[in-house]
Image 1 (cartoon, each protein chain N blue to C red):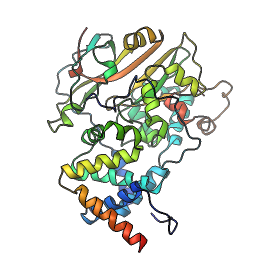
Image 2: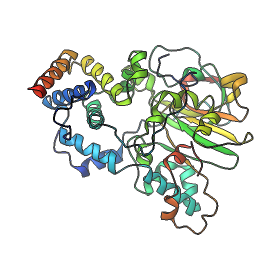
Image 3: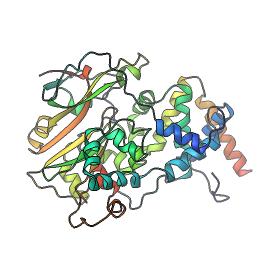
Length: 117
Length: 104
Length: 196
């Protein structure tokens, strides 16, 4: 693997390995303020949509840009880059009566997880 | 995947236990495990999502009882076997040899 | 690797790791000297002191703070921190109206360049299970009481973004320089489980 020096290692770490991918030019499907509903399909494979946020309605708060999709990447099905959004949910939406009225949870969700609400 | 790793919102885990002045690593083997993982993923093509998914595929009871770096190593064994790099038998044999040499 | 007492029996996991390292070394996949370097890097070169410098700069320099909140990755890189597990950063400003706190419920995602490797509790099932559901109870365990009319905003870093909290600057610190301010900033404050 060639001689690794502390300097070379520091450079490799500082460069990192972003999962951000070039935009294909297609605008994001959602804008900040849009209401979205998460899919509720419990896929048997790797995904970044946790169970507690499936089938829930939230609001787009951040547009993160285009990233590879872990669901397909983990299965060796290619990167399928797509827009990723910060989506905010209320505590009441996620936990019903047990949710505190002033609690919010923000998740970073891929386009494929979302539909307009 | 509705696995045990998907912990958000679950009941019954009790208080968050913290450690004052926690070291970066608790044991020498954790340091080695971290370093092995750091280099192996990119060498065998299992960085990121593929490595994470291997951890998610550990048995639920193992996931909850193994320490963090133990999980990394158990998942790595799974990947090494799946990618034809090492078998569990080879690892077990080497462990037995290490014990013998230690006693001898 | 040395330092084991002569006759101390090794745990199964220590033995397993040693066996894996030997076998992968023989196959040319890992190099023990390179492992030494990466361990040293994460023990000595990164940690919450990095993030504390970011926070102190933001408290001292309004232009820097604006850049940090608008686009955190290049702003953090201005201070020399970048790379693995911090490739795409977001900074979250605590205000009198909003208290931010960060978790990774599915895994252990954490902003390594600014905070180092995560503490065990951050990766533990109790924190990951509870902080999204009952954040105020968890924060109270950390000694942080949040008024009922203050929003608690939990960031579950479920994708590739990594988050750090910009805590509110403590009162009475007006005269302090950046170095003195940085000394006030804690890891837990930048995760968001404590206020400063």
